[in-house]
Structures are given as structure tokens and as C-alpha cells.
Image (cartoon, rainbow, N blue to C red):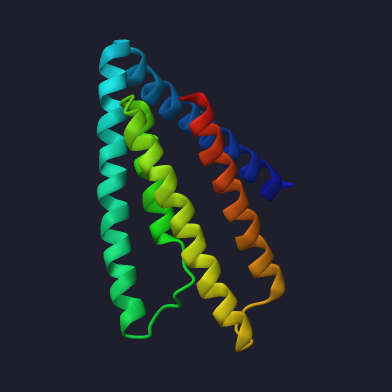
Length: 148
């Protein structure tokens, strides 16, 4: 019984601390104007793109020395971040260009997975997932073209 009371006490204290933290974080965002929030969002997206670029460079070096498979997704993650940034800054041409880059990145990943499947390193399920992701990227590209 004593253990249950102690656990409930810690849970109540933890909930209170979490609520206070959320309230403080929310109040900081609410005090920014919509223009300041948009600027902050663009800055965070730029930061994300920079991080993804570093991740891709590290990943490529690891692939070169055989410490990572060539079937990873850092390139795709970077392109997705660039698309999000371009959308937020309303750069329609950049969005379209990056959508083409996304399709190309998914094609390269599928090619690598097919090669890995031939030697028994990946399953057909992994290949099917990559094929589906490629088709989804192609659909997004087609939609982008239609919306222009």
C-alpha cells in the first residue's frame, strides 16, 4: 500500500511539472506575433536543412568506407526538408525542382535495394516498401505539376 501511495505521489508531481513546463513553453510561442512565428519557423527549417546536409555528408563517407549500407534514407530526408522549406517560403519553382530530386532519390534507393536483394541482404518486403515510396513521390510530383 505504501508503495502505491509513493508511486501515485510521484506521478502527481511529475504531471504537475509537465503541465507547468508545457504552459511556459506555450506562453513563449503565444507571445510572438504571427510574423515572428513565421520567421522562427523558416529559421528552424533552415536549421533542419543544415543538419540534414551534415547527416548526408557523414552517411556518404560511411558508405564509402563500408560502414553503412547504400540503402539508407539521409538523401531523402534532406530533400524532404528542402521541400518543406521551399513551401514555407513560397518558392514554387524550388518545390518542383526538389520534388524531381525526391523522385530521383527514391529511384536510387530502389536500385540499391534491388541490388542488395539479389545478394540476399534485404527482403522483398523492403523492396516493395521502396517501390511504394517511389510511387508516392511520383504522385506528389504529379500533383505539384497539376497545382501549378
